[in-house]
Image 1 (cartoon, rainbow, N blue to C red):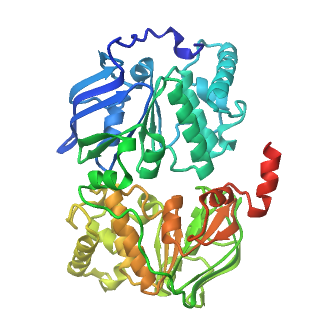
Image 2: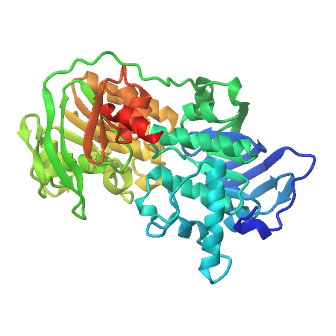
Image 3: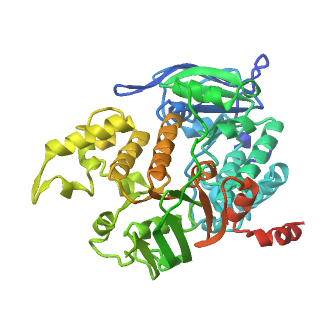
Length: 530
């Protein structure tokens, strides 16, 4: 095999084992937090092995130990039947272990081939390395369907193509064991389907895949076996064909979980949010919204579907008064709120609009503040007079949020940085939902949230709809959009390219819209691809 790692003296697999990976009694603590507790894991060679669990279950810590990012406090790692010590990722790669991270580790202004050979050059002279990589990448593309334009800049590739580059990087370095962390989070359904085909081909060629995902549908579709973790411990490992999503969810959470959103038919009322011909530019002056118009009525949820980066962020920021529109109008409760100034956010709140930002850390919280301070952030003028803050009332409000939204730890005097991502999300949701707004715009409501909390958040959104609120929901999770929304619009390249009824929406058709293929173009695009 003509790869950069061809000269690595990798130990041959022990003849008596069919296991690619064995982890034995792995323990890892971070201060008082016992992230991994006596973990045992066995992964059979040439299979796709899923790992699922709630936030904080220890999945990423365990895989980071296997890939050399962390060192276990105790325990043993066995690769292909032979005990090993993995000090860093270079050791892992030398043992044939590669990892594709959730957030790609690529240099945007380098070409594909430059990214692939970066850190794996054969000598100071780049030309031989480039030519060697070109031949090898063509072979990998032919063998596994990983086609990408090798001379293109990474910044010019789609997200799905960038992910293929990450997989190619690992394979070029000779990986036989691939760890993928939440690989479909930013892919269209069509891109996810292509990824699954690639993974099945890799498995059939003898590669071993370890898949970390919170999407139980993907576990059922692609894995051969699945291991469930809860609170730092391994709960159970199962043959995928012998389990189901309901059983896996219960093992993850420790109780029965409703995986489907139950809601009555919507009863839309008056238009509360009216957006007309909205044009918005980004900080570089590039048009990110190109004449978007939409209406949201009382008592309905309008879902905005689309792959991340197609104008959703700019739409949310503009509606929340954080970004000025170049043209077009926005009306809330019949009041024109288009103009953006230093009082915009407060003015929108006075007009009955609340905003759950898609990035809770950057826009929703001050993590160095106490929980009770974040619980009133933006609404602090309601707690006291002038310069005097009624801390007692603010703490009481925070405690009410903690109890209603099951925020853990149940301590309003903790710094917000000490809460998990899922609980930070609940702090933001509670703050905005409990203000009884007429219009709620919410971005990625369950991003980084475990399955038990997802169920709770979805139910709260439905309750708001049933109370007559108008809700604009933006999510990259197509299942979430389909299950919560009463209507769906699809945003691609800053434009609404279609509208669908979630009761009858076909995932394939929505996927095509998310890729920019309008319904009338489907036949032509199919013909042109043959």
